[in-house]
Image (cartoon, rainbow, N blue to C red; front, side, top):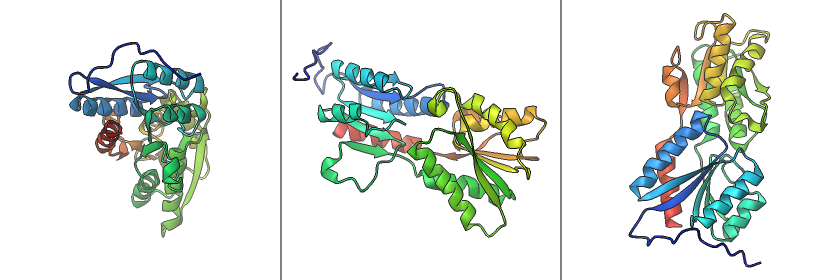
Length: 278
């Protein structure tokens, strides 16, 4: 009744030992979330904190269980990647003393400050989508698509808005559309490579022929490149592909994948510092 949780371990003094922060991600198969975890871990260690990782697949039951684990381990700071922190279990956790930062899911600025339980840190996803589309247009593409998984998040919606903004602002005669694929699990966090291979066939069948693709992230873009090559298309000569994230794997693809780089170092530092302050 009093929401009491027995501590599993005695908390160390703030100035004597390493303390802990939590990170909740939907998947680590998608390299974007692995890169986030790495950057946060580097910053946390610099502040004598360790990172506890929860892979929750955007499942409310799994997220609730992880939050309970965080409380029982004495963790009072949590970074939530991709999930909507406005859900009941996150609000309840914040009310009970958990400092929560939402990553890449920008909260509405219209929320009154007194009722804000959360901070949010995100890159400018609208600008990322616009830059990606603009790069294709400047390099001669005139029939381009935005490729994504069908489950819409705020970040994905903003990238699509940026893509559409670039099309509307160009002086060229261009065509553009959004092409979606449906993953086995909602949002497809662990299936982006495979989804890209499948979407390649759908995109190659479009008429008139697509000459440029903006992928929602690099994992999807690399899958698209593999799928397009299997269909006999040459990347860059027949069709151009650009991703958003600039993960390490993007430089190892053939040809190297052009990508819009997120300021991950700066965002990781901001999130860790903010959690420790709170």
